[in-house]
Amino acid sequence: MPSYNVTVPHNLDQTTARARVDGFLDSVRRDLPAHVSDVSGKWDGNQLNYRLSVSGLGISGTLVVEESQVEVSGPLPLAAMLFRGQIERTIRDDLTRLLS
Image 1 (cartoon, helix red, strand yellow):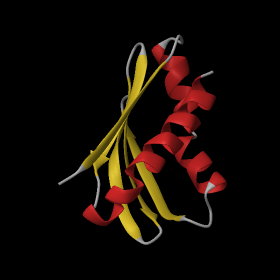
Image 2 (cartoon, rainbow, N blue to C red):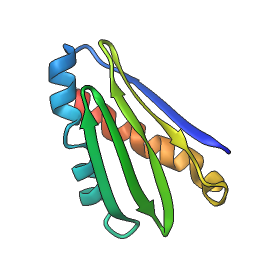
Image 3 (tube, rainbow, N blue to C red):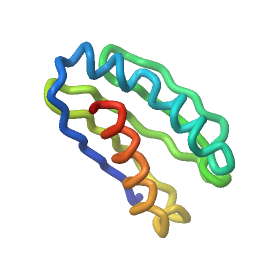
Image 4 (tube, rainbow, N blue to C red):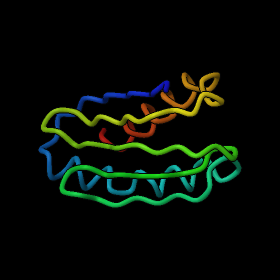
């Protein structure tokens, strides 16, 4: 199965970085209401396991806050492969904004 993977470096301590990305799913829900629905997620330490629906396609994955970077990855439905670049760009842009 295809996948997506985005890594965004940060210069924050891990606790501050986690606090900033804590609202990641809220920002996705707020910024993309026409395309994103059924957003849910649960933190397990510094790892967020999430699920959402993008234009009717189920997307799941993990967001891991590490000491110097945040990594988001997961499987990508085959039907979403055409949008992989756009999905990764949106994630990268949102995380860069949150971590700046």
